[in-house]
Image 1 (tube, rainbow, N blue to C red):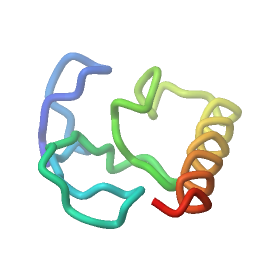
Image 2: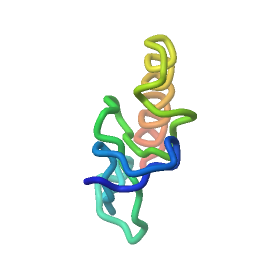
Image 3: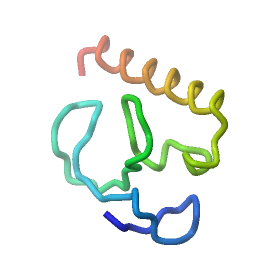
Image 4: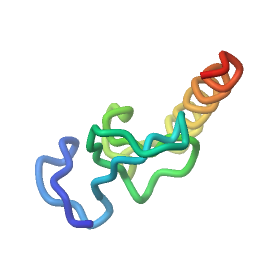
Length: 79
């Protein structure tokens, strides 16, 4: 927790590092910054356009739907 977030250009109390890949369900070698405020299938901060706090409700819902489609298509592909 308390990692640097690229969306606000400072340390955020909700940002944390992890090597967990939510698409594969396994740990991989690359370290990612996750946002603790996000809800949905993929909480990687790199997938966001702006900070989750600054997003409107409609943008949040659109983002969740986009991540669900990405997650479902990945699982259907059998990876």
